Length: 381
Image (cartoon, rainbow, N blue to C red; front, side):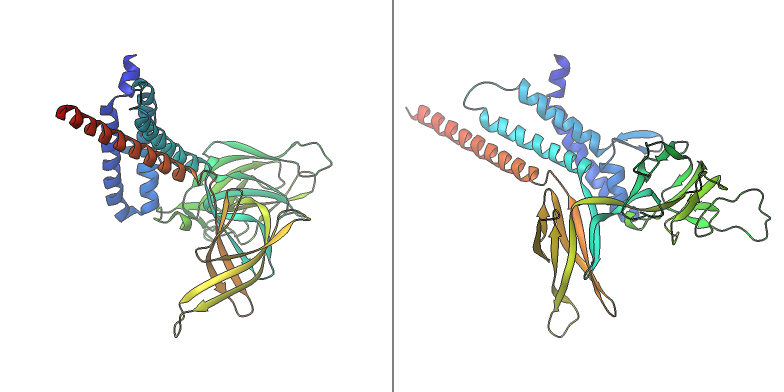
């Protein structure tokens, strides 16, 4: 019972709020030299972070403690009566707000889609996440397997299965992670040094990786991976970088071909979107766009489609996905529209939480005013 009382303590509430204030101030100072994304990862997206050898509670742990503090205080301090509904609604609203943030963190996606006029696509490309794709030579775009780069650590093994539809799935190629770097560049062989044995395979001619200092903007990071491979003819190691101009071709033991590539992660969309036309207008006498919009056709199935206009400040939403008109590019003979794509199934949770909290605050304020007026009446009588 004492543990429950400790978790429901107002002192814990004050301590969590105070520490979140400290993290906010600390992270604001930190981002000046390291960038906002590294500050977010270090202070707010972590359970702990190290200062020297000392582990310091991060934002995720602090907000988790605050959630359980609100939850336990809801039950420990609840008392039946007309005075409590306002306070209970405040607790529920704040807990929903914390849960909504966690839900968005876990399930949210940020990506983009770039389309030339007349072009269509049913996949979005992540801004910061990477994957290793594996495909056959006949279906390199439509059919592929992939493993997330975030899941790879030194020493981990993974494999890809057969891609033929008329055969039972079985392991084709097995990989072991020898090296994975957040930001790196590929190194070509030194012509003055004679090579011994098989060189690591790479479509751009890289044979090794050099780790580089991490950039402030994660969208500019270029990771590198070095893999040990089995089940492939004439190849023992592979080096993959984003600078590879084409997928790396592999020949399996049975003579069939496969292609491997390190690329930005793809997310399959619940639609096929086709750009029919793009238009823009400028402020008079300037080259600053005042408005730009895209006329697209959304194919939901073979027999179901709709025409949609996406423009500045007027996104298109469908089943938790939101498509924003982000930017555009113009070439000599065509125009390209760029859409920012987000997936947030909990988009409405903050609105509900804010509404519930506001109603609870209003109820509690009116209750306190009513009680104060009742006391004054009793004194006068």
